[in-house]
Amino acid sequence: MSEEIDVKLELEVAEFYQSLGIHQGPGDIQYRIILRVLGKNEGKITQFAEIRKYTDQFADKGSIGSKMKTVFQLEGLVDKVKRGGYIITDKGITAASFLKDSTTFYKKNKRIEQIIERMP
Amino acid sequence: MDSGLLLNASICLAITLSSFAFAWVLSRSEQEHSLKSRPALWSLIILWTLVGLTYLPTTIRMLAAYFSKPTLDLIMYNLAAIPFAFVTVPLVFFIMYVIVGDKKISAYIAGTFVVFGILYLLFLYTHGVTGPVVSAYSSIFVISSDVAINIYLVGLFVIPTAMIIGLLFLILLQRMPKRIRYRTALPLVAISFVFDFMLTDMITLVDVMQLASRLFVLIGTVLAFLAYFPPMTIQEKLGIRQYPYELYEIEEDIEEEYEGVLEENDV
Image (tube, rainbow over all chains, first blue to last red; front, side, top):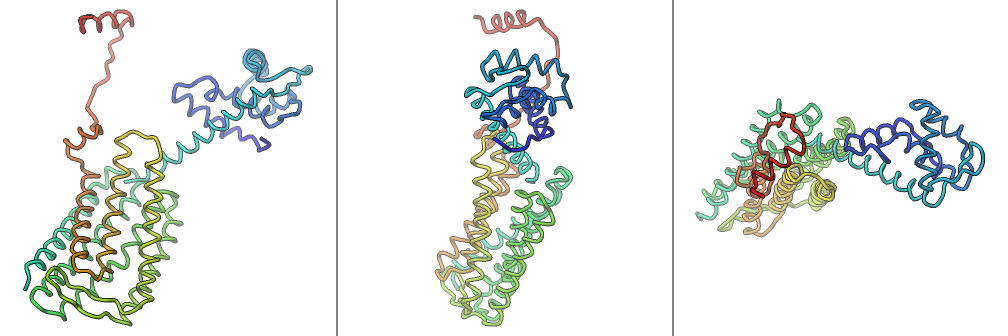
């Protein structure tokens, strides 16, 4: 999972899921970005500052910190290993893999939508 | 003078009239289509016009065979070969545009099929044809050039057919509302029917097969009509009818609404 994180695409995907009534998980942009950064650093420590590099564009430090605690740490998706340092767990990798599938589903759905749009 | 030839001629006439009518109806519905779908719509209009233009001289050809006029038969065969050679061009443009969405790329790829068409006509006209062999049901010409037949099979038949099947599977394998699936898949099935049997019609050496192919081309044209203008009974049977409804906007307490529904149902 070493590919670059496209914040614009993640926003698009999150908005798509929100439009389907899914506001948590794949429909939550904060969840998406945090998990993408953690997934990218599989086996390494992810610094909180690295997550903020992406999330500062749309969320404040407090809400990201709160999301880390109330969702990621609470559900065991990450382990806090030092001050501002996290490691993704096996469960977290499963979540990251699901997130990747959600992006694939979005892209596939969008492609089919465009094909249908072009059919007279 | 066999009545089978008249039957053949009337099938060709039916294909001609229905193809022209379909092209005309499609062109009249232009305003109902979005800007994005218009290039594909116009390629369909051209496609159906070319089908009509192929079967108009073929109708005369069958009548010429009926009245034992081999020269007119040959002239009409050569005339019908022109629109037939270019049927693949709008078809390829249609498929490419629907999949890729780029007019320029689609036009370039469709352009290569113009080359195939020109080459086919070039070999067909320079090497000529043998015939006509008039039977009870049809009049058949044998193409003398092997190169023309190869261009015909590979360039005009295999590639476009593979493209249609590819697009058809792409649509059929997706989960989508029944109405949209019907609206997108049936035109492709109809085009595939018409296109494949047109090619069989032109290359076959068996008289009954020619007649059967033309019958299937006619069925394909009817299918295309049904795809765009499905009758109410078909819509109801397939569950694709869109019932008109209005939004219920009176705000009610959810518990009151639930109790009201129970009372209505006498539960």
